[in-house]
Amino acid sequence: MPVFITKIIAFLVAAVVQGVPLIYGSTGEIITEKSGHLNLGIPGIMYMGGISGIIGGYLYEHYSANPVGIVAVLISLAASLLGSAFMALIYSFLTVTLRANQNVTGLSLTIFGVGVGNFFGGSLLKFFGETGSIYLATTSAAYRTTIPGLSKIPVIGQLFFSYGFLAYLAIVIALLASWFLNKTRKGLSLRAVGESPATADAAGINVTAYKYLATLVGGMIAGLGGLYFVMDATGGGWTNGGFGDKGWLAIAIVIFALWKPKNSILCSLIFGGLYILCVYIPGLSAPMKEIIKMMPYVVTVAVLIFISIRNKRENMPPASLGTSYFREDR
Image: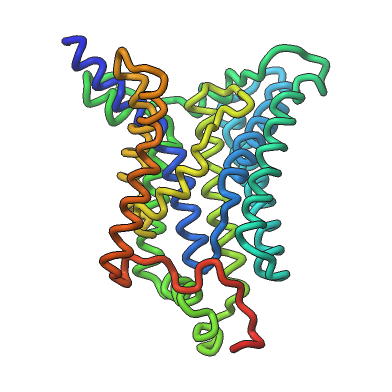
């Protein structure tokens, strides 16, 4: 196979690996925003989902004489979902019950999540009297297991069947979220809450319950993005700051995808490709690499300007996004 083709395949595979966490993050944020809440804490939730999965997997491997891959996956997955749910509940309580400012709450949650992730990521081994860096061989190997046979097919196998189960689960969740929001009664009720909570309340919809559930489910989905990154993309290891700005990219993709979960799949893969494109272009100077890394954000701003000019309601964010609901004002 020509070297040029090999490099293109390697780039496309890397783009998928980088894009999967963005699918989780953007899908989770879209569900949250459909309830009328802008959760800027998604980067922190992704950190928490990642470090919680690391802690769960590490404790199992540390205390088990013969760790089993499937058990390690279940434990780390449960730990990740619990850690993400905890962060989402904090955000829900502050913004839904106490009606705190959503922007400030989200940013504070991000700072908190990143801090917790970096603290435990750098100190977990020391708690058990060990040194070195975290490396979960058994857990990571289970997450990275590919589809038997199909992954060995030349080119096709590399492009479509060389990923762990979380990569395919991300696409399934995004499609299910799209179906739920557009084809089910509860999904339409959630969208009604995001558009006009007062009207939804008057129609008998429990606005508070929908806001809590949307934020909780959205946070748990976003947390899986962090879990995928540490277990699959980095091979079961933790590096402080290793997530980079993927959480913010996920929030940007929400705009680029026009608040539609099914659109976030392709958008995330494109952003994932742009994110690592500079690595595959030889001879780039440091400033040019940084300019290329800016492209996802430049594209997002362009899309935002475009949809604002066209002003089509179906491509706009929920009408009550970022606004706290006071039932007394109904």
